[in-house]
Image (cartoon, rainbow, N blue to C red; front, side, top):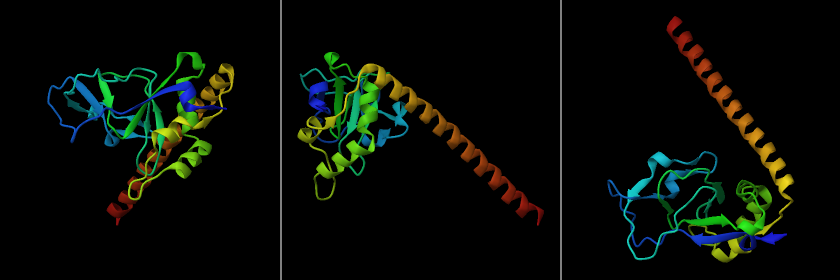
Length: 191
């Protein structure tokens, strides 16, 4: 068992002061809660463009990084397989980067965070009266099981096959719904 802080760098989202202003032609993009879905990932086309103030170099997201949604009623990690713009996270997220020496696949780490045992840990550890949140210390101390790389690859292959199967089933369900709707409309026209 290892804690998250042993295998990943954990950074807070960009420290915006006040509201995130949408600046047409802005040089930076910002991922906000409205831009992410635990199942579909990041809606890159919908990101707000802005300008970042301050002297500190931003913690730009890069391929292989993860975002962790730390506020709300669902906590999840998303692996960023591509980052098409200079992009930062809003303060509602933590920015995770696997340490080189950790021997952990970023996709495996995101997968494990999203599984039920870790989700139970997060639910028990959340705080807040109106909006639940995960604090940095809770995230840093998150207990993780890190198997050898070959086992991580096997788990990821199994997960990818399952995700593909879910997409096929979703498509079949949508097609069947359209067929049933068409039949119902035709019945109404015939009567």
